[in-house]
Image 1 (cartoon, rainbow, N blue to C red):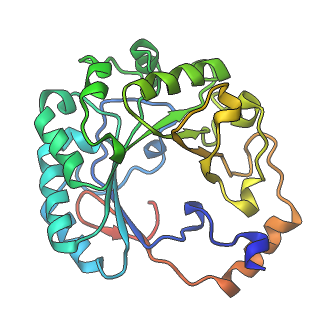
Image 2 (cartoon, one colour):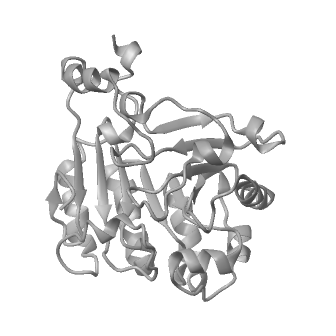
Length: 290
């Protein structure tokens, strides 16, 4: 039964014992699809790293990993380095940081590189290899040469790049291939191709772009890891790909089936309960987005 319905297979099912640190509400970008537009957080915009760290210590035995996001955590790059160093030293937990690489990543490059050295995983959203297109997507102007920084980043084996399918900006197979090839030449080999969340005006299907077919995400999960994209790229790629589909009921041609209903009904019978929480910038722990 477990195998048939793949009950424990994606993060949307909260199958990880995880804390997400909402480091700040502040961000230098104004991306129209940003999830933080809906989840404003609590407390002050500037992170209180002492309170955040105490909250991590209070729950460290309940969780297996930590993700630091925002807002944009790199806006407080020195504070972020202090926090992740303390987490690694005293809580001894894997740490992932999500960033769009704002200006401090360039002006305080040594600190940025030290963060990458300390943490376990860095997720960067370049939006597009063409800086002008990326600026249009982010609704902000880059204040440095982003391509040069991508080239200089060390520990590229720790870095994953997220490329979002966005109507009007990154919505064709040819454009995706150009982006993937560009970053592969810079030394990157981990990519996540993702669809937009409930934004009809921006949504475009990765299935339609590439011509592949995936199982429906309700019963089988929305993250298809280690996906062999080479047959759809037209060349042999040694990169590792994750295909992240939308799994919300409003999204493009997604219709729940009897399998999806059965999964919801029988999952509690086979699955243990997992601990998931958000630690906000004032140290408050909430077991849901607020």
